[in-house]
Image (cartoon, rainbow, N blue to C red; front, side):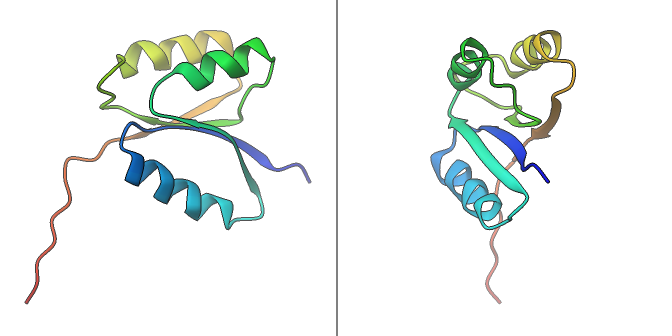
Length: 94
């Protein structure tokens, strides 16, 4: 069985590396690229490597995430997009 190819686009380095670390432990997933913006998508497109799944941060600072999502959808209809959105982390100690 082929691995599920994942493109991870998240501008927060800590979240990006944490998500990647979790997925790398799963035998069914292969992270083909990770990026803080849509640059990785353009590089993969030029090499004709389409991901099966894109994990896309909706709150990218350098790029409009919705326009990027639209571009991915128009380039490769088979690619599924999972949107990530973190409002903030709240930690309480009792």
